[in-house]
Length: 266
Image (cartoon, rainbow, N blue to C red; front, side, top):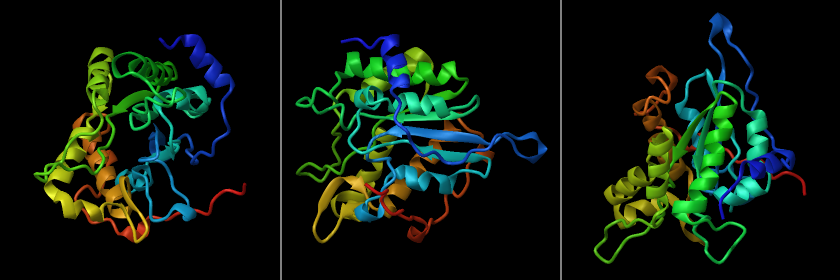
């Protein structure tokens, strides 16, 4: 089923309250403080103390950005491009966006779940329809949309080669980016290449492998930092940001910089 503009309006009206990073509006000398907003799923989302050491890459991204760029991470566990809209979360993000801001959009992990009609989308139809709502919404508010292909899971074949897990969704996002003239960060391809270099055993140190859990989708602090570094490197390469807007691209980021806030009261 195709997504209509009316659905986007309904989503905005039903927007859920979210907590945003303070952004400010200007800096001394006339340089405006911009905010980079993230709309996405659990691989990017902020995690809380009860989930540690699980870490979303959005938690590490601020370490690579200059002082005139803030990060407002709206990504939420378990959401797809569809459910994020249907729950009113896109509407809340668009209410917070200001001209000159950026909106990074990464979905597919949960769009792939065919058994769940509240989240499932088809790559070449409804997935693209929903992504277009993010693109159009950001542009209507003078912000720049940026599509981010989904980061890859830790998956290897019998020969030890890293294999893709997202089917047609990355290709559908790439095609939409070309058609709509939207900047694209191809994190799917970049992360797959990184997992290939690290290998079957090396990648375990980047995912949420603990004494009680072997999680091949979500990251620990080193993994989140590594993926955030991929994102940060692509931002100037694709001319979304200037080189002066990013930092520490080749520096070691201490794991201790990652912190997990206490969960909000129920």
